[in-house]
Each structure stands twice: as structure tokens, then as C-alpha cells.
Image (cartoon, rainbow, N blue to C red; front, side):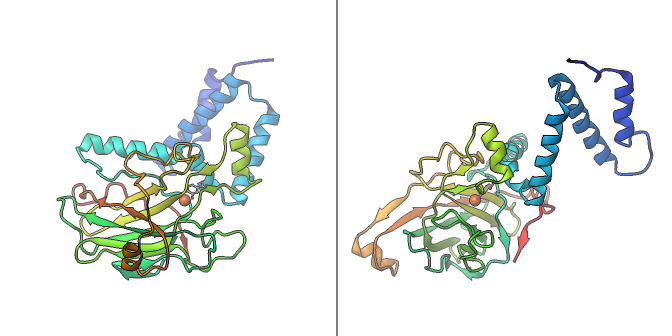
Length: 312
Ligand code: DHB
Ligand code: FE
């Protein structure tokens, strides 16, 4: 039996009561947002004839997502992180700001407090036996196009099993493995040695995976490397590069792939290149320059400091 009660005046006034709109106290913005989201939800329940069993299945799933700390994992999977990026792009378009290096999602696996060095860092501790050596480097540029000496390049990525340090279910990795902060040198250059990461998958059997499966989707990401890049009088850039050639480059469950963020990976096996990088054998090389954008009226209009991030 399908019934419709959303349009009743009683429902409308009930939604206002539930959202506190008939009271003076509380936070007006929270009231506004809760009222809108609850209204959309009530209407969806009514329109789709959602059964109590379906409703309570959803509540149990929400409890599981919360208990496993996976709200930040399913959020990109549902495209919300990418949608927020598209909105920031649209705001920048309206302001006339060009993002020469595109932004893309942060993901849920950043950890604050990585070791800091100037110009160069080794990211991996050498224990990932399947790792293929990676040399990645480039120049950070200011909004005026000049090299950005002293810019901060925070970089993090996973190992060849797709596990990040601090979130490794096997407990195998040392703290801050494959996480570093590099201060760009006097020419604005950064460089690091690490291993080429492999793709990442959401935890098997997790509530995140359960929902994706119910949508007929996978929970895999192509191999990628995360960056926060910042510097005085510029906006902080959150971005990632994908490893070119990964079969999932255009099939990312988190929708982070963007034009301009899939740099070439060049295999080097000649002696001169190997020696120049103090290596013992062949390696992969990625060159990637990063362009920052200016503050807007003196402030970073995109900063999201309220986001909860792990501190070591
Ligand atoms: C997820 C994991 C990542 O490594 C990432 O970059 C983005 C999202 C996730 O599990 O949702
Ligand atoms: Fe990631």
C-alpha cells in the first residue's frame, strides 16, 4: 500500500518543530540545514514508499559506519568530496582564479606531523620488498609564476599492498612510513625518493564496501600520491597525482582523477641516471610542477580546518 503524507500541513509544521524553527535558541544555520535535509529525507521516504525494514537497515548501516570510523571513507565513494571540489572550482571560476595545478580530494588518510626536511626526502624505509624505486621532483611556483623557495610540500602514499602507515591493518609499517614534509629549496624545487605505490581498496567486508557492492560498484582506487602544498600569502592546495598506466586511472571509486594530474612515468635504466640519483638499479621518474594560487582578499577562502585529521 502506497500512501502520501508529506504534503499534509501537519507534516510541514512537524518538520519545523523537529528542526527547532519554532524556538529562539540554538544555532540558526544548523536549524536551516537540518530542516532542509530532514525535509528531503521525509519526502524521499514518502515518494519511494520506504518500508520500516529498509529504514532500520539504513540506521544499522549508519551505526556500523560510525563504529568503524568510516564516514570519511564512504564520503568520497559517494562523490561528495569530488562535488565539494567542483564547487570550489566554480567559486574560483566566478572569482577569475585559474588553478593551473588542479585540486582534488584529500581522502581520509592524512596524518599530521610527518618528518620535515629541505629540498629532498626519502619517503619509504626500504622494507617494502615489492617496491619499484620512484624518484619524483618538480618546482613549486607562486601565483606570479616565479619559483616558490620555502613552499611546504606534504606528501603521503600507500605501499605495494595498498596500505597506508598509521592505518595498516597488519601493523607492519613504522610511523610516518611514506609520509614526509619537504620544504622547497632556494629554487622552489622539491624532490623525493620512494617506491611506486599500488592501488588502494576499501577494507574488505566493511560497511563502506557493503554499500558500494549494493550499488554494483567496486571500492578500488588507482595508484596515487597525495599532496598538500602551501606557502606564505598563497592558498593551500590539496591534490593528488595518479600513476599513469594504472588500469583504474579512469575508474576511481573516489572520483579523484582529473586532467593534469596524471604525469608521465618515465622508466630509467641507464647508468648515468642511476648514478645521478645515487641508486643501485632502474627506477621510475615523475616530474611534476605545482602552481599555487593567491589569497582572496588576504585569506585562504578554501581552508577546511574543521576537518578531523589524525595526529600521530
Ligand atoms: C579513500 C582512500 C584513499 O586513499 C583516498 O585517497 C581516498 C579515499 C577511502 O577509503 O575512501
Ligand atoms: Fe589515498
